[in-house]
Image (cartoon, rainbow, N blue to C red; front, side, top):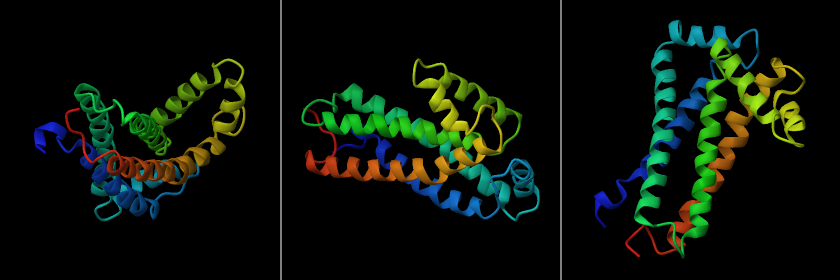
Length: 189
């Protein structure tokens, strides 16, 4: 097993997920997901809380790093052909983890509730709403009404800190189990 065969990208992604979980729990002590307080809590975190800006920036940069390492991990698996039988199920689990990582990144991007977040959630939910048949009901469920407001913020906060995080942890456990079941880390087939 050579380091150049895997580059430890899966392990780095998992390490970043653990760091994001820990820093995210710490950030939850200083953030209230309400339209009136969210932006001020972020400003207060950056200016008034000891090491708050460091904690927030670490969370943000680890999130960027996780997106990057998961993408590179997927490219490495594809390039080396490690998605072929008997590992095709684990490839599907990996694709689900990639989507969950991107969704976690998007939902976290919205939490400061500034102009960038407001328009990102508007564009993102409009994209969901433009899908045929199921688009409008899904958009309504995501933002909790007909326009972006307090319901949207609390729903995306809940998605970010509970639903998507638990889903990602569950799929990671399945991913690790399948790695062991399929014969360990990727090797030439």
